[in-house]
Image (cartoon, rainbow, N blue to C red; front, side):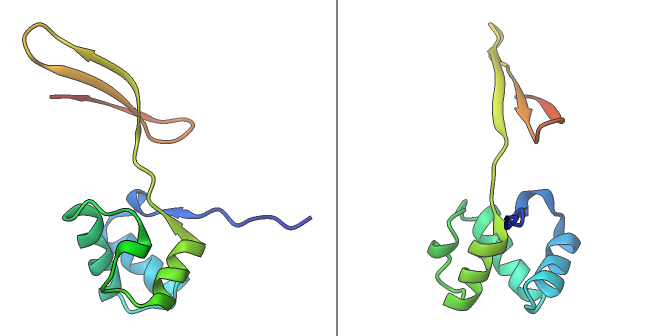
Length: 100
């Protein structure tokens, strides 16, 4: 039986990790990582097909090897003083508490 390779969640990588992923896994220049970071973090785009300044070949590689999975809200509690608490699930084992 064929095993399907797990896709890399790009949100799990810092700048250097993303550059290494593009160079080592995708065989692309490191500056491509910066282009994708701008799409994700500045334009809030997570669909690789919508990243129009990337070539079709690179978008296909990203579809095959990568994904953008945002944390899921596991718990939310608004307070009477206007603050909100969230528990964000990062993966099967980890979570982050955030307060706004």
